[in-house]
Image 1 (tube, one colour):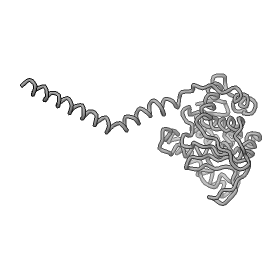
Image 2 (tube, rainbow, N blue to C red; image 1 turned 90 degrees about the horizontal axis):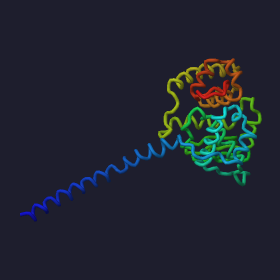
Image 3 (cartoon, rainbow, N blue to C red; image 1 turned 30 degrees about the vertical axis):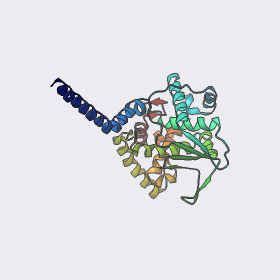
Image 4 (tube, one colour; image 1 turned 60 degrees about the vertical axis):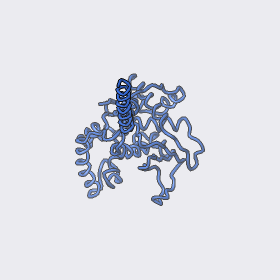
Length: 277
């Protein structure tokens, strides 16, 4: 009798263990995703453990004006974010560029962090590759020459000559890097990944309302603070607004105070005061 009872107890425990294992196996994928979100994607997006390499910092100091307006604490954060961006992206040379230089990596990364400095966890995670051409390149998709573009498959494409020109002519309101990254920012906000929906929806609605009015003005009157290409559609309008927001903030503010303030809400920073919001 005792032996039978022992066997019965053994089978009960065995069945319970098998049942528990089955549950763990069934929910393993969900558990793994939860752990991945909180401990890898979510928390690690905020961790800045690597200091900017000295030879990278030299480029930043010498050639990136935005950096110089930051206070010491923000400079330290900016440097680490630039290093992190470089670490997680693949830079691919194309058309006339044989290899990616230190200067290329640092300045493109700095441009991305400039745009997202108000969003400490945003690194354009959907866009894994930065493809770099020497100058204007021919696209087989559009069958046109381009200076840069953003591919929804996860590529940001830039022409180096035009990228550098944008920062050398810092008050022109034309900056290829900021323009293309602005497109990438809007796409990133709409992609359902760990960076999804980070832009305040009410601010976006306000922006679209003001954009509609200004686009109509550009199309009908042909006169605006923004160049005529901004009248193409709301996406191009946003990109050109971003260019002027960083390069000509005082003139932008005088032209349309409401639109300027809405843009500070969208990007969580104010170039007039060199401050994050």
